Picture 1: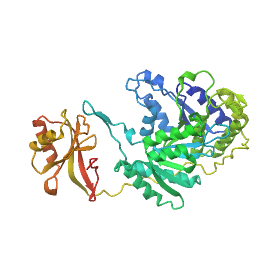
Picture 2 (picture 1 turned 135 degrees about the vertical axis):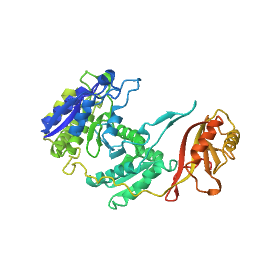
Picture 3 (picture 1 turned 180 degrees about the horizontal axis):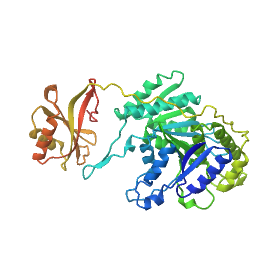
Picture 4 (picture 1 turned 30 degrees about the horizontal axis):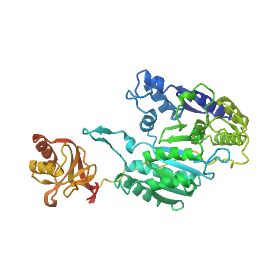
Length: 478
């Protein structure tokens, strides 16, 4: 018997959760359920996170969380509970199987069967944003070696367990050479440990185009957070319906399972919603907790129900479907098919689908870190970079000197083009004079001199080399 935490959510959430629980319990799932309330009511009661402290305690105690979709109120500074849960509980891996259900679900890709494994905690979803000038806001993209190693190793271990043949990495490291470059580098390192599994790398834009056109070319795809968020929805949609997809969010100690769709408040209380997405999440949950025989029984019954043409409104199609049913009737049909197997779809076998056991991340010995300069970001309302350069060159002449100014990443000094449009946000790079070693004390001295001369410095970024290798970007055009 496994104790799980259940949240019925908002909108159609309670209906599809009731349907899902009725199916898996009828199949013999050995579960003890503790229910908590999260979502809209909790938000509107004054909790900006949408979850109470005591609910966190229950989730952390039980380790397994089955969650229906919730509604996040507009405005008011409300935080995404999904993002918060993933970060607080260390749910670093988001797993989304996307498989065609042709011919019963309309799709242009009848043999599609891919799994998208998305890093779940960092990237731009760190949520670190600032307005820095009148015209420019910033969002920090954070990619860590531990984050890369954990998600990429999970992808290869998943492929190994599931007898998948290939793992593909999507990044944009031709542009973001430091952040996406690290993800690609770690992918190559870990791929070498799995010679029996084919590996490849695609730049995200052409990779996404290829996936949308020829998804059968892919098997398991691993990628950073933002790309994975977008492409997992695209992949689910081109199988036929986002409403049929579930996802698992896996951490080292806790896990959360859910549908990938929203709470659809317009459909709430009408007994029309399709519970399949949440049911797929629940099947992944059963596999994770070791109740693989029950998961197998439920999935085969669900496939048999689709084959029987018993469909909810969202997938009902004349000539293919035989009966349009509501949420409760669909659940009853799946329950009636428990113990049966599909005849057109391949019956599933989950004998090897227990939770993956991965080694914990081990921190490497620190590199030799040397300071090679500093980028000073300036809020300045002028337009001529030569004028700004003269101001900066005149305020501080000790140890370091101005070497470059960029605007939105484009070099505008020296030798900038007058055609380049500039905002009021300028990155001004200072490097040691004559290649000498730079001291950290030069930076506060520079800032003090800038302040005394009325130059508005909004942030700084130290420029480092690690083990002698430059670890910062150049300006475009340099």
